[in-house]
Image 1 (tube, rainbow, N blue to C red):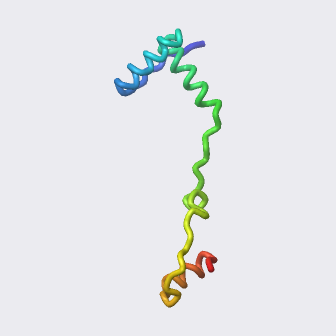
Image 2 (spheres, helix red, strand yellow):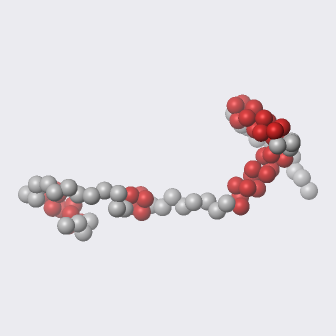
Image 3 (cartoon, rainbow, N blue to C red):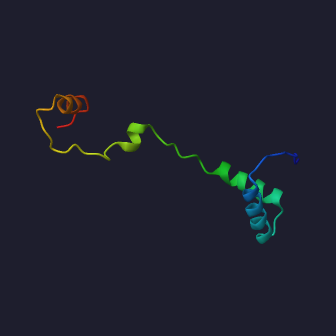
Length: 80
């Protein structure tokens, strides 16, 4: 059984959605329903933690090994 729902959407989005619905021969309601169903079928991508996303993206340049902050960071993060 269908249920009536009221949503608020930006005007530009509504205009664009109506054009797509018209081009594909569907009503706006049908287009929205199909889009929602498609979005629920696709499992959401897990973004991961900051560390997981950035792990391996940076390297430590050979710097002044006398710098105590650099030594502490290298020790803390297991870098050589």
